[in-house]
Length: 151
Image 1 (tube, rainbow, N blue to C red):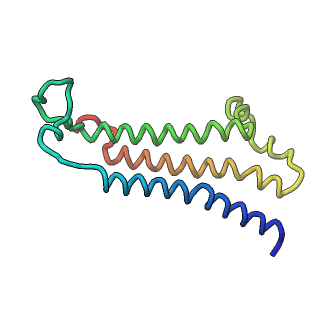
Image 2: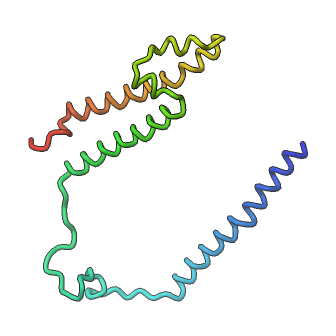
């Protein structure tokens, strides 16, 4: 066996034995002690929600309309889209091309080999696929009426 592989195995064993097993042991010990020493005597007063010393006069659970959740999911979906696209723009220096309207092919033509040309095309193709998937999802949500508040 190679010396570097042996060192990697030793490091992995050190992490497992030195950190994971004691942590797992402490969690297991706390759970067993709670089961053995703790007591659980439920009654109606203990199970009531605490509301500043007052007796609750209505149900503690409030039901929300499902449309709020649909809007929240759509917001998160498109917020994550921005989180993925902005770093890509910053990392690949695409902001001037997109904002200034430069021709993409003239920027790519500075590449000297076909391999470099194909590597520079990977990012825009991936973002294009990503945007097509998101646009399809938006069209589906729109078609199903998820964006309409009153039905």
